[in-house]
Length: 297
Image (cartoon, rainbow, N blue to C red; front, side, top):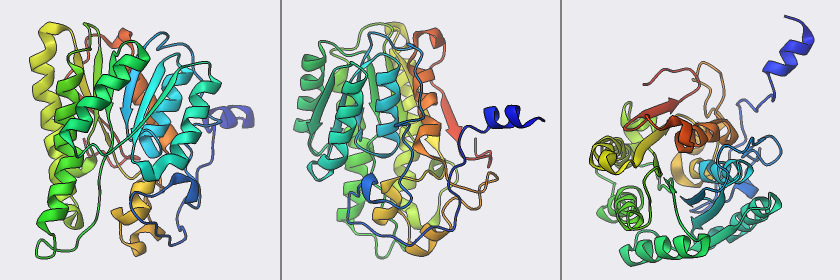
């Protein structure tokens, strides 16, 4: 293979472990990570695949949600993002990136563990975007715990409220606005199929999301609303360094994947674009995995 072809195929040489140990308080900021994740800020190139579309993305300030927001804007969509107030610094960067593409950006901070807020979130997003036809349920809570004996009911409840209840509340509210041809995309995980011992509560929620996706796709088929999910493997996001993994695992995060590293958010955003675009109009009830070659699904 000549050098020109090699450079074309390997567009970016992403960081490999070992990484520095680093811990942030929940919910964590991408801007404080080392190395800083690639969300596609300079690497993603759009081709108009979502021109005129209107999307709501939860957890859109950092990680996978941020990468999806950037990709959607560069594909021509207007985008509303939700995030926690403590994540305002990251969210402000995303808003600027969306607006730099000439697209409308709507920022709606708030805690999706509240049903009332979830309903208001959808209503505000649809109003300010003047419609809604893509919903990305992406926000998630992940806090490792070594034993069920030390996993509190409070933490268990917070994980389910963030990952499962909020998805239910937001999706239910969004159905008032989503027309035929709309797309709902959920973020599950390889943890749904190959759970880690220290992620007992998180893995359960991700299995619930996969089942929710497949069942809802059957419910909404007659309305021509597609429902799919993406299952990430090890991805380098603020979720991991703010309690998602023990510090000793941060150093070698992603090392066991056949590609020898964690994925960068920019690498998974194209799956969300593919699920959202109208050319995939016969794809529903699917869970697509991106895990660096492990082949979990």
